[in-house]
Amino acid sequence: MEYIADTVTVIRHLSDSGEIGKHAKQILEDTDKGKSIIYISAITLAEVLYLSEKNRIKIDLQDIKKKIIGSNNYRIIDLTFDIVEEAKSVKLNELHDRLIVATAKHFNLPILTSDKIITDSKIVKVIWK
Image (cartoon, rainbow, N blue to C red; front, side):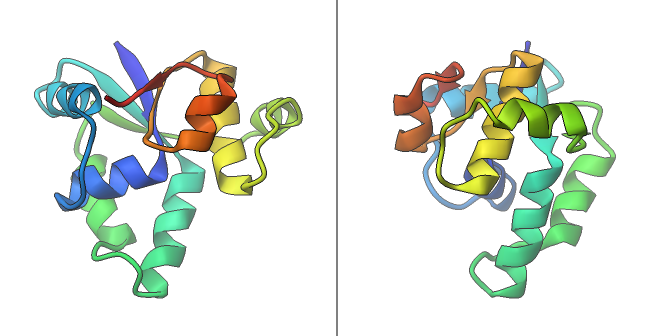
């Protein structure tokens, strides 16, 4: 199965910090065992860069790179014109979330997120609890 993970999920999982919902955690563990594929938006990488430079998270871009570059189960999705166009139909205020959700919608991927606004929007299937 294939999924996309939002920034908070990626940070929590790869830094082993913070809570992750039971269902999302199982999917992440399965991915680590090679049973699933998790896509990570290029937007998430930009957010990690920004948050680490502001000392708001304990991991940085190089930590993320080390953990995902050698894996076939974590894949980066580039931000494309088609995804930005898809974002026109995603009515979320936060630009990063809007682009990540647009990516999920464009590729018809469920998203691993605890974000209540994304969940309540019902734009894409959310997996967490």
